[in-house]
Amino acid sequence: MTSFAELELRPELQRALDALGYEEPTPIQRETIPPLLSGHDLVGQAATGTGKTAAFALPLLQRIVPGGDAPQALVLVPTRELAIQVAEAIQRYGRELGARVLAIYGGQPIQRQMRALSSGVDVVVATPGRAIDHLTRRTVDFGDLRTVVLDEADEMLDMGFAEDIEAIMQEVPKERQTVLFSATLPARIDGLVRRYLSDPVKVRIHREHSGAETSRVRQVAYLVPRAHKASALGRLLDIEAPTAAVIFCRTREEVDSLGETLGARGYRAEALHGGMTQDQRDRVMGKVRSGATELLVATDVAARGLDIDHLTHVVNFDLPSAPDSYVHRIGRVGRAGREGVAITLVEPRQHRLLKTIEKATKQKISVETLPTVADLRARRLELTRSALQETLRDDDYEQYRVVVDNLTDEYDLVQVALAAVKLAHEATIGGPDDEDIPEVRASAEPPDRPARERPKPGSTTTIFVSLGHAAKVRPQDLVGAIANETSLSGRQIGAIEITHKFSTVEIPKAAEAEVIAALQATLIKGRKARVERYKPPAERPSRPPKEKA
Ligand code: AMP
Image (cartoon, rainbow, N blue to C red; front, side):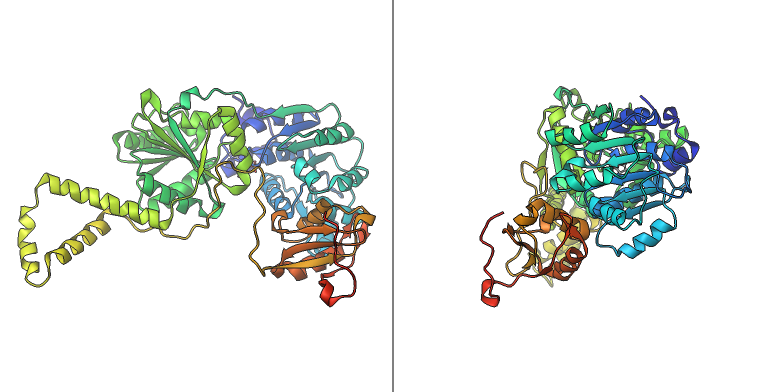
């Protein structure tokens, strides 16, 4: 098992990782970082959630000399969200190094990016469209690049960025390291690999794994946006009422912060991670073994080799970075013939990794809808009912008869009983956790890509773009331009129709002004377009688009 120390990263990077609470490299990092450090080109098959960003970011930061005149590393990504996210990650890893990182993407005033570029940048993270814009204006110089990363290459091709990538690759030095990451490796990716990578090392996270040892574990996953994970966890813990559970997080920081959150919500929870002394760990494990603590929040490293026999639940607060660690984690329940439950919280973006895990373990993880507030209330009432039933069975309540007798002078017996139940209920059930958690639809078979949202009637508008088949415009060019230049994601874009001379695109009404301004300012298939609200035939003399895209 390789540790970060064995990777021999420069001390500034190691310090940044320590500060972030990363305990050990993820499998994809373990396999990609050494060949990248020794200068190889590399193709990595890895989805979001595997730790792939650090897998390419650490080696590229290892190679740069911060403070140069021109950028030394370029990362191309398909969307602006990813550009921001990746740039933030590289910034975090490169903080101690003083690396200057800039995200350039559409939808942000280009002048601001030009100013930032001219004041000096070491690492550029860009969407292809905006990178071309800057190259055309000569506001960026890719002549000093040492590393080029194509991240989520399959998505970039899907969004119609093939030509943009081609144009950008003409501007980068021949002597360079090229890295390609992609969740899937369809044949089209081979074309990119052949053209731009030289003798690349190929890495994928291993898939083979027998699921035999986990067959007694009920495996459930819930799709929850990051911001709502802690509330979702609370709701699930209340419903499931585990005797003892281990909750896995990826970093020390997350372990500490979730431990505190759960404590504040009234759970008996303890944190366990590699940053604690042996003494502290022993104390925590003592509490877990004696049952004084029901929830143990831990990193993979800290929980390695732990054996807790009364464990009923394993919770993956963060999806593990590879199928193997998933199997290790959930293998802690369902031992000795007992049944266990493994609950995984998945951020909608990490859908793919969940599928990879299912394939590797050859076991179905059932994606379910989070229990509602009503479910939770029903469950709590059920707990109160069974607590009362137990008290009735114990037959040890005679001393309270005087209170009941006294009250029945004024109230009827049912009223008195109801008030007593209310008191008991409120005493046994901790603070309510009734925060609204947005529902992310759970289909039995999660799609690789989120389905397009069905817009509410009247909530969309159609825009006209003065380029069509004659300009070789395809639907993915329009989707790519919009997703690249505006705050909309591809799935918010509705029907697209392309005629010989022009195209129309259905978008949310609220984004009309933004989309029109953005598309006017950018190039589609290398050409400027006139963009305006589409006027149906009744309002304009020209004919409506007939041809289907
Ligand atoms: P990515 O697949 O790059 O989107 O990363 C997924 C998440 O894993 C991010 O939140 C990272 O901060 C986190 N992460 C990446 N590498 C590690 C590591 N070695 N240990 C713990 N967390 C990590």
